[in-house]
Every structure is written in C-alpha cells, then in structure tokens.
Length: 387
Image (cartoon, rainbow, N blue to C red; front, side):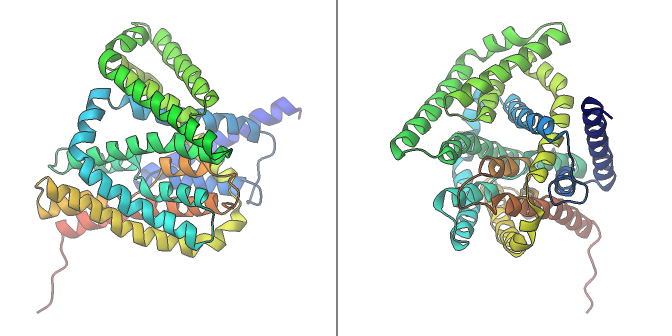
C-alpha cells in the first residue's frame, strides 16, 4: 500500500473511531472529551496501537480545532453582553479566580516546577468546561432555573479571564527577555481591549460583511476571516486561539446565528481531533507519577469551585437547592484546561504538565456530571433515615 493510501486508511480509521467513541459517550450521557483523551493516549507513542502516518495531519487539525473552539465561544456573546456580564458578576468571578487558580499554582510549586509552568497549571485548575456545563443544564432541565444565569455569567467571566490569560501565558511560553515579554503582553492586551471596544460600537457592520443569503459565501467568509486573523494574531505574539475569539465577539446579530449553525459540525469534528492530538502528545509513562497529584487537585478544586458557585448564587438570592446546583454545575473541567496545558506542553521544567492536565481533566470531566446526577437522584428519591 502506497503512502497516500496508508494515510487515508489510517486517518479514516481514526475519525471513524472518534465517531464510535462519541456515540458511546452519548449513550452514557457524559462528555466525550475524556474518551477522546483516552483514545489519544492509546494511539500515541508508548500506547497500545500507535499511529504511524497521519500524526502530522492530525496536528494541523488540532490547531484548527483550537481556533474553532475559541471562535464559537466568541460567537456566543456580543461585546455589550460581555461588558455588562463582567460588571455584574465581577465580585463572584474574582472569588472564583482566586480560589481555583491558587491551588494549581501552589501544586506546581510543591512539585518543584518553575513559576511559568506553575502558572499554566493554575490556569488548568481554574476554568470550568463551558461545553460540559451547557450539556448538563440541558440534560437536567435546569436552563430556566433562577441560578442558571449566575452560572452562565461565571462561565462568561472565566472565558474573558482566559482570553486575557492565553496571550500572557503564550508569551511566557515563548521565553525571551523580561522587557520583551512585558511589551508583547501589553500589545496583546491593547489589541484585545481595542477589539472589544470596536465590536461594542461596530459589531453590526462586521456582521453585515459576513452575513449572506448563501450558506457557502457565509461559511467561506467567516472561516477565511478567522484563519487570517488567527494567523496575524500569532504573528504579533497573541495566540491564534485568542485571535479567533476576537473574531467571534466582533460578529453579532443574524450573522452570529448563521455562523454558529454553519460552523458547529466543523467545530465538533476538529475539536475531537484536538483532544485526540493532546492525548497523542502526552507520554503515558508520565501518568502514574502524577495520578495522586491529579486526584488531590481534583478534590481540592472540586471543593473550591463548589464554594465559589454556591457563594455567587447566594449573592443573587437563590434558594439553598439552587446554591448547591450552581456549585455542582461548575465542577467539570474540559476543553479550555486542555488548551492551556497544550500551550505549555514544551515548557522547560514542566514536562509533567500535559500528563497531569490530562488525568485532572479526565477525573473532573467524569466525576463532575456524575456528582450532579447523583445529587439530583438523591433529591428526587431521598434515602430514608432510620429512627
């Protein structure tokens, strides 16, 4: 079999396997992210059945997957919604940030890591999975609950913090002098603030440029614009993912609705490839050494995330059950924790970061939804207490 045929057969087998994994996750009513990571570990170097010819293609697909994830995240919110959301939820968001970033940072120091990979680990433990939380809200029928807007506002705050954090971490990952890092971070923040301000006032004009009655024109326009901006962002020291996020928040109205409808299937495909590639690039031999650390981090940040969500719902006047639901909903970690870990995969002194992040996300993405469902089942059918 020639090289082209081998590539197609191997790549087709991988994508088909991802489809089967996603079907299994749907049957179990869980996020497919942990299963994609496990598949990547099994197919990577040192795994059960390493892939041979298609890894380079999958790596490119993974980069596009990150771009799609951040683009779709930006499309969920208009600039004015982001500004208003930041104002209303800022106190709760800051509590959430401190309580859940610090444990990861402290764990990195305790492991003897330098400050930069420790900062990346703080980002991994901080941010909840918007995708898993959204699925839980729909599955549990909680979208109309009083505490749901609080949960969503916290997720928006986390997303914005991540949009600021990614260029900073990206600059730190590239190394360089302190002055150069400060300059690059300043440029990144200026571009982000300028883009949000522009979108706040002129978002409709960007939408009118993208929107077209032809799906083909709309798809090619938004996809091409996103890749162009992502590449330019990467070139000036901002991550491509953040560039894609800025494109997303610049689009509003009918154009954003049309873009979400057109791009969702592509996002799902390339996001699956991204999680698979993260597993491929993680050495399974490092997992045993970080297992206990990942479990301990899961226990600590499970408690701190629950407290942050409960406190935010309490400030908004939710009932006791609503406060508990808000805290539990925020437990899962997922796509953006992996994105942050992927950025720091090649950091000096942080070789254990990808394996630790993979195990941590596996634990939290599986345990979080299970705890939510167990709590709901217990509320519906409480165990009688014997006299």
